[in-house]
Amino acid sequence: MKTVAIVGTFDSKGKEFSFVKDILQGLGLNTLTIHSGVFEPMFVPDISNEEVAKEVHADIREIASKKDRSLATEILAKGMEKLIPRLYAEGKFDGIISFGGTGGTSIVTPGMRALPIGVPKIMVSTVASGNVSQYVGTSDIMMYPSIVDVSGLNSISTKIFTNAALAIAGMVKYEVDYKVEKKPLIAATMFGLTTPCVNQAREYLEAHGYEVIVFHATGTGGKTMERLIESNFFDGVLDLTTTEWCDELVGGVLNAGPHRLEAAGRSGVPQVVSTGALDMVNFGPFDTVPEKFQDRTFYKHNPTVTLMRTTVQENKEIGKIISEKLNKATSPTALMLPLKGVSGLDVEGQPFYGAEEDRALFDTLRNNIDRNAVELIELDYDINDKHFALAAAKKLIELMQK
Image (cartoon, rainbow, N blue to C red; front, side):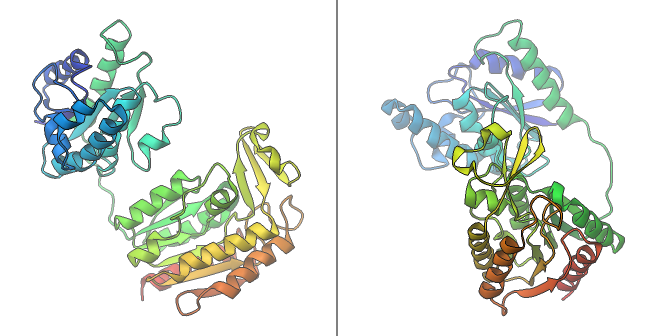
């Protein structure tokens, strides 16, 4: 019989969690209840808040006496981050569900994020319809809007809670026996304006016995890929679209953080890297672009995405950053430069074509790359040219077979 972990503040929302527990047990599932609140629960849980606090060497009574909500949330969240993956590894549950506002969501989601991808996880939350990146991170948590506050059982909340319970029950009870042929896995990065390149490279790699997982270089995509590389998912990395560094440096909306381009080199995974879409910084609708950039060159990609051309100085700085990251690599690494353009907009006749900007980028890379650590390859094509794409795919196979 499958087990669902029910995690939450049983001190303030005991009736609500008891309601969900009864539904799941009525569906023939076991439950594992974990109390994440500070005070005494309304029913006896399987795992107490005292046990959660002990995971980080804290005393729940001392936490309660301080009456500091922020401190309590921080400690219990850290406890959950250690406790939940350990319980899963011990086989104590098959899926996990929780309900809460900002506090409850903040406490439970760190533990959910620490679970492997594919483990069913549902967070019913009052903040689920907003920006949930801080709660979901690079995981596959399903954020379910609670519509009303998680406070009481009424005609709306009972329907929401029931649907969420049915969803987690379906995920843990039903399995599809779909077998995928095991092939060496390759991670690749793609953007709309590098799609032709990555598609051609992917097709070549798949024809030669590899499975290619493509990540959209939108910040979350880059972060997720880096996390999975560190978790030893991949045999090779085709990181042709490094545009997230433009947003990290300049202040765009699709940055992947300061550790982008580190995981493969640190984990010993062979990688082929390029300069895909380093000609652009991403913003939302045009009226959201910061006023300080008003004199720059823009391209309205669509009604919700505005692209801004990177400058000579920004390209120099990006070149230095990429060199610094790749020079630390302990894995076979090649950096490939598409000398005739880094994106579909950066070719002759297109809005972002910039020979001076590209020269600044390429010269900086030439001058700063450690040739003992990184193989530098320059090709007289734009990044979406078939010759460039195939050269990148072939180079990665060569590095993986060394």
